[in-house]
Image (cartoon, rainbow, N blue to C red; front, side):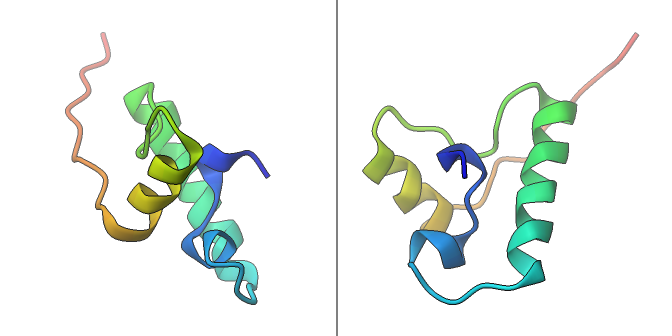
Length: 64
């Protein structure tokens, strides 16, 4: 998958199930609403660290 949408289970190389798909769908929905992904970093290792240990920031969006 695309690294920006990976679930923590995939990052840890653990077994996964439908919950990983739900996590990735949540990332897609966040991306659509905030116009940016919830986890971003310049390196793949940094991105994976954020997926594992950080909470995405709440966002304020005003559509006109």
